[in-house]
Length: 484
Image (cartoon, rainbow, N blue to C red; front, side, top):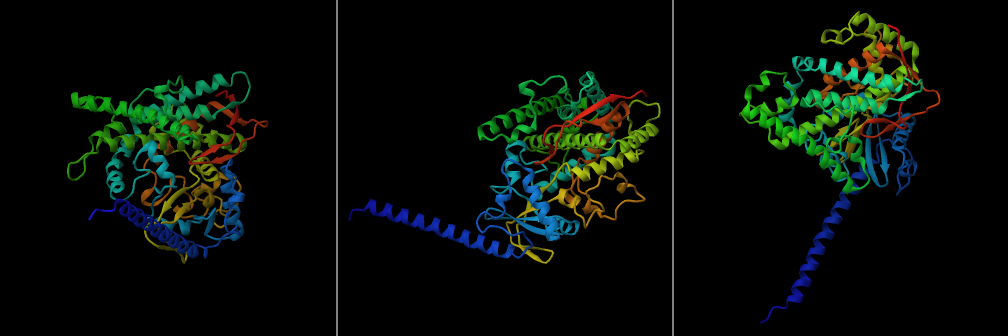
């Protein structure tokens, strides 16, 4: 008997379509069950189909933050829900709920719509985007790279780079006009980062060749082709440096004894308990992660701190007096100075609270959890929102006022560690936070020591929350050289 291939093919197609239909049905049932559970959370009135999307302008990244701020204030809740169309997102806006969520073993959101999945194209699976055992192992291996003695070696590099920045700003301000400091600070932060971590003299403040382009603004390109091209450019840049250093260490193992060890040296030589080091791919991912995280976030912190100095002139004078007291006749900020600053540190911390360089980050729970008595089904997008916590009236007194004194040890607000989150908190806090704070202290101290900083009254800027908190229209300041 001859086989009827047409019938067999038809049956196969029917079975396949039936399987797909069953899977889609199960997904819809599961999604509906999740939505029913999440509807119990506090939330603003929303459309059954559009959710809160009509209030969220696709052209304004601040609109989502505005909706979240309004929800936090009107609902007066520690946790609430925002609907982006039919998709629910849990918003954490209080230290108590942040602490609960942080202890529930939430993983970085690498789902199809998750932000970390998009970043992987650019920075791979370094500490910023990895999860589980891989993150635990690599975090442990990388911690010695941020030891006090290692970081102290970078102080002179930071001073040298900031001196170049000050010369650039002095030249730009020579005509008496205001200067958009944002691009200058970004290039300076990038110079410091690659010099300290890779011992690479990029001189990004002087020129930028296409094959050296590592400007992370471009990863937000609207076209995937452009994104891939630019990601390839930046990853090729760091890959070439890693390969060259690896060859140097193999040919001359003693070379690392002749200069200070940098981040890349540590990555290439570190070993775990079993004697295994990091693979080339892991080293590449960590270098790209550190370059991205260390450059963008720190640059935004310095920019907003300078902006705040221009707005609050009386506080700026107190910062200047603090810097003069600590430095005395010195022109460079040395390691021993870093722990002696008082009001300078208060001002920087208040700028980080008020402007929140990292406004929020997303997690996803692998298993059902409970937060504040609400059931959160597995696979839910959970936004941990430092900006909301920093501006929560139930957390910070006079939360909309800029008051550096709140960080004075004798008068600070009674907040636990989870109330102030510029570097996150808990086990997944920022591994490079001391490096970043050293850079910010040195940069702001030297700039205030040399310049009086004034906001340009004719230029308006606003926060633009993305992965980091960018200024919407640059930051224009008048810089008047002091007569020290």
